[in-house]
Amino acid sequence: MTVAQLRQAFYEKLHELENDYNVKHLKNVTLYVNPINEFGEEVVPRNKLGQQVNKLHSNGPYRSAAEDYKI
Image (cartoon, rainbow, N blue to C red; front, top):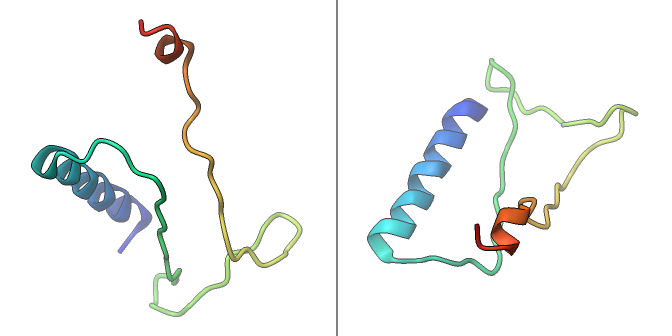
């Protein structure tokens, strides 16, 4: 599965969760991935300094001013 395919699948499942099951808010979300190359061999993600990357954290999307002012 490519990253683009995962992105689309994730989008579709979130859409289903929201529309079919009326889930509007989430407290915590965890996504695990097992990166591979085009030959199916495991790869280790590394940052610009060559250090292994094991986790990515996000505090959520940027909140726009329009949301704050209910525009």
